[in-house]
Image (cartoon, rainbow over all chains, first blue to last red; front, side):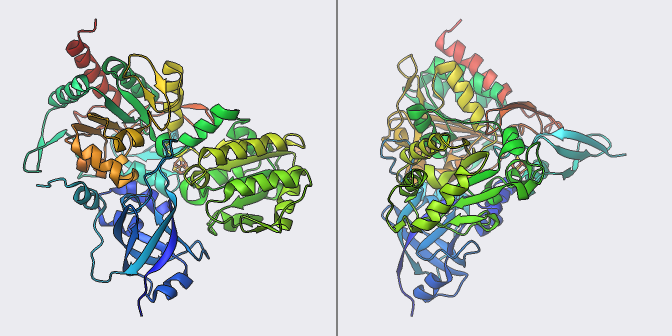
Length: 135
Length: 438
Ligand code: SF4
């Protein structure tokens, strides 16, 4: 049975993210590198999903569809990791608490299976949320 | 015969590797291979040669399509939106050279703009902490030659600064560290078992967001005072062990990253990390250094500081420089809807800002100066492609330890393309006319 689970979300760099921002953010490879959430295998089991399933990540600040993958830098049960980029930034906390710095790490989110929802390309995801008309 | 260019500087991350070799085609126009760089650096050089690169400015039309415009038209639009705005924002600067930054600041001064760099979403909180309590730091060369205790706190150089460990911090054999890796003890503090943590002698898997408590507990352990059984998920015996490892070294260094600057306690985490460093100096020699991300974010801070007195989030809208993070910082300015024109250069806020801030950029007149297509160019009204600094034009950059290094030009940009500095110089001259400045 698929369940909605709660995680503590952090974002950050990965080497694939670094390569893909240089090779072209308009390309599908950027989505493959950053349109993911790295999860602990125990959390994937709790959610009742196989790895590489599309999921919806929701926080108080928004929601985004990404692919749930099994973490290679774990175990980290209870912690979800989305590489820095527009997918992570659709849900992280913009609150700066007067420091100028948004809260990119430590955002409570829920994650649920969204098998039929598409994962958008990076530029497309931002344009759509900003309501930019694309010709 | 192919030519090889040596001592090329990599314009990607704050490690600013200066030992790259690039082989070029006979006519010197094509980059064939890049040696010594990590995969990211290699990709940067090779992708700059992509055939589908945009080489002329483009203006977004009513129907959402792009129309190619000349650089002169792009200069005119940029100069006008900045000169006419009440509170323009000029953001980015971290992937360009100091020469371009300096020209940009002249424009900012004439237009009463807010100027900010990517420290806003990176090490801005570090800069606040440094102003609070100072920073005992050193150069990467000193670390290579002397450091035998290396702490990576909330940073993951295996992914973000791939050659940092082999050039400076874990593996190199230095003057007093002749046994390389064996001369050093490595401690990693991170809530995940990162690829850097897997190289460590000790990994403290801190509970996410509780770094302040752990830093503080280490200071208590240095004084051999009472600790609870577990702090931030780490048993007190482990904390005491790390305190002993630090004390017993001859020269230690704390490298820290986004794990502490971006989590909830922000600048207070860094305050405490610097206080720990100071405390450790009662027992041995210790230093601390932020792992700066973009290759010249440090340079942007330097140029802003020597021109206006502050390293980021500078507001010139009242005719003199003000600095007050939370008020004059980019994210806050955007979220409050105070900005009425935006110039982005050498960075990608569209990808790296919270989406609520990006929505504001999409609402106002905007120009994005960037060799790549990015989410920022995707929401801006004008996209100005430029030459790649460090590949197609040289110029000065500052490494993460504040050491300035001149980057090198390797190949020519595609015919007719301007550099950041050339484009900004044209904008500056036009703004001068518009503002009637002699
Ligand atoms: S470590 Fe950084 S500066 Fe060095 S080659 Fe890799 S990306 Fe370039």
